[in-house]
Length: 598
Image (tube, rainbow, N blue to C red):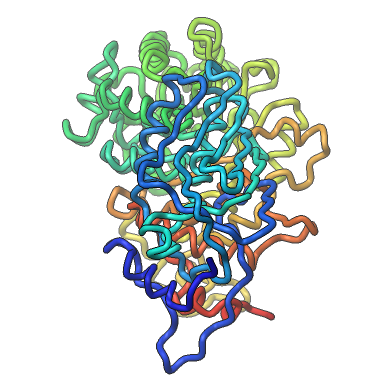
């Protein structure tokens, strides 16, 4: 039947208490023009065919079944069955002029060709989804369980609280719809730093759930840094006992296994990172003899800084005990994290910190170099990581491109090394892939979510300047200045959405870009602000990494993305993710009225 003019009121009466009270503007304002009928899915699927605006209600007995049944799908089936049955999403502007089918959908059938394919790099996540008209069922077909999980998320987003009494109060989904979908990049992730500030396990699990909503598939866990060592490792327990902030700010082996299992159930890999030999001051509590320049003021007067930020400390490549401890750490880490990738850091090695050690100074005086020190460290840890633990070694780009300390390509075989970029945007990505390495892109100019929140070091007299020293040069504290954030400005969702991680690459070079990760470094973040720092900006990255940022005409879909991201953000909030708003509510209630140009 055709939707009545009272449908929107009925939808609002049926919405859950947690949903925002959307609807028509007050009578004093003219009704906005309604947009054409569209399917709202984030990230945007590759192909959608929906010839006629017909919806079908879900049966109260709606269920999901997989053929063949497989343990990798059990959690996802249970989770999405519950979500789809109970979620009553009320769109900001409810669709109009549609027909409601009289045949309810009782079954969503999953057909998986090879459910035994393990979760890992490059796994097939493609799927097709169809809702045949008047069939009482819907179908998802995929090559792997992980593609089926992506299809379940899409089906959940097709559902909304329309139909009113004619649908028996049940959610409705588009009928006669066909979706074919697959990701543009196989590596789509979030980096979360749990060393600068601690995040409880529940907040990490919520973040992983939000990642699944956005079809992200890699949780890069930057576990340790100079400030704290919060993970308890059985071979070296004192690293956490003496290097964490407190006993309640540690991750036990049970915590880690819970996080890894939860992530895998949503098709998300967990890649652990232990940053070394730099960023290792937290190791000094348990093993002071293997850490140089530990517990010193980071920026001594009239001397080179000992670290990029407070606090100080690096592993000493000339102490044999360094490698015994490092191997214990890597061995325990590999036992806890099954992913084939293990991130070993190697960024921002500070020469002055190494030179604080007398043995290192003698080494340098005898003709050694800082690059040779890093080479000694990599040569003593990388073969163990690759050959003994059977892992691909991931490093930050600095290990190869560092301006002061780096190693040559002969130390880093291409087949077992992945490099993660963060400096100089497209330039460093091109340098890495043109050298034959696979790359994960995390450009600080686009993908660093901590940027633009000002400085965090104290006793900073740079703020105490009222006038410019010369015209055209923004001061530290000027409206156009950095405000103390080294990577200012704030990375808006639009800037993130605009970023093309393949910019400037040849076709051959582009094949070596695995994907990208947005990064939340936590000097100024903790659980209290986690959701707002990540979302919906990470959702913007998720769409570009899944579907690109251009429409079929080749133009970037700014207007379309704004409308859909607004809708998606409100749905995420209703799902318990405290995402920041991107516009006043007035804007989506008045389509196109908030555009910069018509």
